[in-house]
Image (cartoon, rainbow, N blue to C red; front, side, top):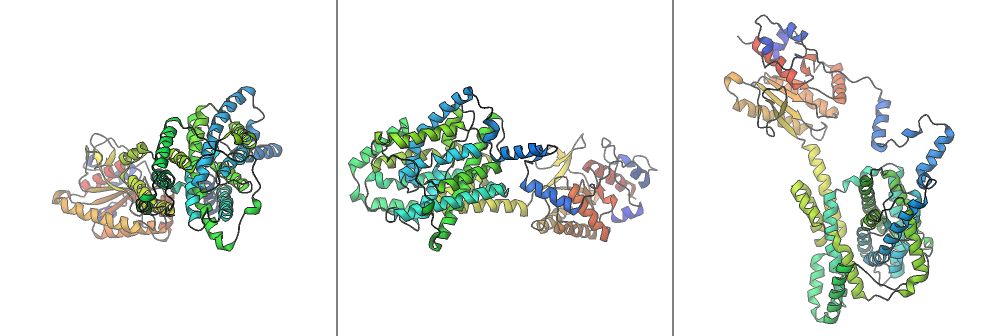
Length: 628
């Protein structure tokens, strides 16, 4: 076939009439390759010329500004642009001027409703983080006020969340005892919150929000389920009345500690704890007693001692990423239900700045809580004013209503925490992941097992590592398919997926469905050669392989290693007395091919076709003409 191309002067592209059967171009005995070339009307068009600077600008824009936030500024007067910029930074200025009494009625009901959750959740989540319960209530007052000014979600209700509380508590407890050194532990918590806010705000300012996408849904589902079990097991100390209990978080040491101290079990405590837990799970109400007063300034408690700086930075980074992921996911979920947009980068800046402010006002890490946001949404909230109403309600409670609460014993707080985190075990989500994707299920299970058998941090690291490994496997081992023709049509599809598709005699059609780069070029080279060997071993003498077609329609990008791969595989195929044809290379791929042709004409015009149908029709016609 290589010689056949030269004999017929390059042949051109292909027959534009894709409805004619294979070999129809050779139906007339006197048809020549020139006539076949003249019928080729669909050519592979090169992309329009573009400078390197403009391409880099487009790439940077799509990477960091995929939502094109400044498109509305174009063509506007300077004054209008300044006003739009201020509204962009402070979304409250966008909806507050048009705020009405009817909207306030809805937000008032929603705010009062979610405020009823703030006290029990504040108590339980602060206890989960090994912090004084009052810190949990402080965290439901200042951060919601900040978010109402800076946030872009109408439904997000801000406050402490279980995952960030659990992670912060477990990481700081590894270095400092919350009971032995409570002031130092509190200082580390506030400093970690500051770093969490700085990380979150920086991601938004630098437009690096795509980083949080590495925390997949499967990772979070498994992590939360494992965290819920670990948290519940930690409460066995209070529920059983054990005095000497392990400080470790893993399943094995916790259960060993439980059964090694059976003599300390108290049946009265167990009975009280079980009864209260059943009551909580049935009624979802809580009591507690706290001191009156608003947030105390805490900027003087921020600790930058080199001894603990690494710990607080690591804790801030992990809790910041986790809480940011949850907050944005929750905000987008409810925004989709009401058909409005949430700006992810603005949310990062809002959540980050509210945590920076919170670290200076006796608050620890907060974000948009799913439970509060769900209640807020169902209660009919209209704007972020519901967060203001909630915050003011918590303020009134902090100032005047604390003496009305009865002091809650440890066994009851343990039951409160179990009731709060038990909902993190999402069995329907696990089942759905199992049905949809077994690899995702493996990631979920590894996150779960890592948390309960090793530690919270290592479990999360293992799950994220597996998710990244899966992405790398998809890059280094891209999907390739052997295609055949669906009879009666000019459609070519995967032989494995479409049973009615049939192989084209003498032609091997391969489709690559991924970018071609340095990470996968060697694999693609070896895999194509193996397919050729398999094809030659199964074909008979009359239908021996002559042509290999590479369908590049699904290849969005290629690098220099990818181009080198195409050149190498072309040379390798030609040594086997076969011919390589490329179908529909996309803009960037075609541009790189043209550049490769400048040095040496590796890919002539007769090697490029717009569709697989045109390539098969043209090549089949030429093959029949060369038969003796």
